[in-house]
Image: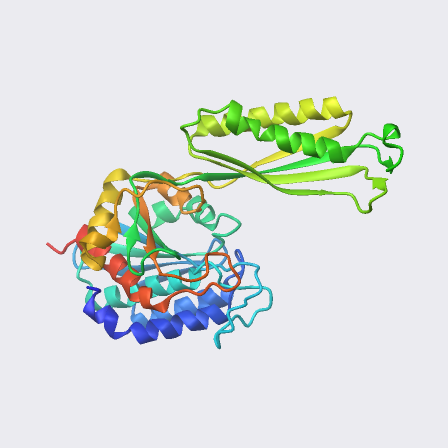
Length: 387
C-alpha cells in the first residue's frame, strides 16, 4: 500500500497513541483528558499554534507551510459512546460504561500522524488547520465550533474528514459528490389517556391502543405521502407503556428517528406527523403531544472537492480501491455543519472485517491509521503545492 514513507516509519507510535486513547474514552463535550493528550503530542511535533478550549474541549492547531496560500482544514472527532466494552483487549476502556465503539480514537490518531508529518516536512504552501472536535456522537460539536467562528477565525478555505468503515476492504476508500449522509431528526410522542382495570376497558381511554395506531399511521408518511424514488426513513424505535397484565395504563410514549436529504421532504414529514398524531389521538379519545427535534443536517460534499479527494485517495490506496461515486446512505454526521459553510468532502476508509460501529466488540484497525494519515497529508500537499 503506497502510504507516505515517513508516516510508515512511525506507524508503531500511532498504534501506541491510539491504544492509549482507547483506554480513556470520554463523552460529548467532556473530552478534557483526550484533548490534553492531543495537545501534548502537537507541542512535541512543533506545530506553530495550538488553540484550546473551543467548543469546551476542542482544539485547532495551525501548521505554517512554505510561502503564502490559503488554509486547509482537516477534522477528526474525539468523543466516545456510552457503551460497556466487550473486546477483552489489554488496552480496553478504563472508564466503565464508556467506549470508543465508533473509532474516533483512530480518527484522532490519523490526524495526529498527519500533523507530525506535516510539521516535519512543511511541503505545502499556506497553512493547515488541524481540527480536533468533541461531541460528534451527541451535541453537534462541529456545529458549536462553527458557531464559535473557527472557519472565519482561522480563515479556513476548505475542509476534509475521514471515517472508518467496518466490513469494507481494508485500506479502500469511498465517497460521492453531493449528499453522502442524511439529516437526522428525532420525534417523541407523549400520550395521556385514562387507565383502569384490564377487565373493564370500556371505562378507560386506552393509551396502548392509541400508541399502536399512531406508530402504524406514521409509517404511511413514507408509503403514501412521499415519492417512492426519493430517500426517506421514518423509524419508530421505542414504545413504552404499561406495567402488568391486568391494568390498562394512563400513559404511553413513542420515540423514533427521521432521515432525509431534502429540506422540503423534512418539512413535509414534520407537518404530516403532527397531523397524524393529532388525528389519531382524537380517534382514540386520548391526548397526545408531539416533540419534533431537528438534528444534524445532511452531509453534502462539494462535487469538485469530492472528486479531488477521490484522486488523492487513489494515490494512497491504488486506482482500483477507491469509489468516487458510491452513493449516499442514511446515517448522519455532524461534519455536515462544517460543509454547510465551507466546501470540502467526507470520505470513508475501509478497515476490513470485524464488529460494526457502535458494537461493544468493535475495535479500530490500527493498520489503517497510516493510510488515513497519508491521505490527510497528501490532500494538503496536492491542494496547496509549494510554488
